[in-house]
Structures are given as C-alpha cells and as structure tokens.
Image (tube, rainbow, N blue to C red; front, top):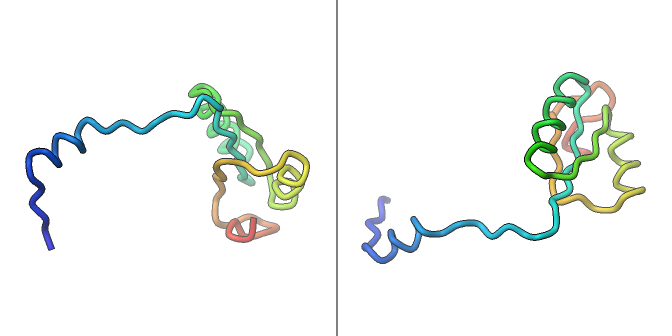
Length: 87
C-alpha cells in the first residue's frame, strides 16, 4: 500500500535530523581478516567513534567482559572459530 503524506508531514520529515549524543559511540569491531578490521577501525575512528577491535569471537567476548557494553557491534557472520551471530 502506498501512503500519500500531506505537505506538513513531508516538511517535518525533511527537516528531521538525528540527535547526536555528546557521549562518543563505543563500537566493537570483530573480523577475522586483519586488513578488513583495520580499515573499519580507521574509518570509524576518523568519524569520532571509540573503537575496540577483536580478531575472533573469544576476544570479543573478553572485551565485553572487561569493558562492559558497547553501543554497536560490527562483525562478519562467519568466523573460523565462532559464528558472528553468537558473539
């Protein structure tokens, strides 16, 4: 079903901007390919995110145990040692 939004709804939607928290976003990046891990890490850091990296699921779990919850997890789905869904 296609909805036709009225003019006021369109104006409100087009002027909406996400609110940025003053706290930096903490991201856990898990990837078993070091070049990919490095690239994602550098890109996120350049945008102001705080990153922690791990080469495998076990290291990622230890990072969470040591540092607490993260705001975002970026991982590939298939690792040699542990599927990404279980991290």
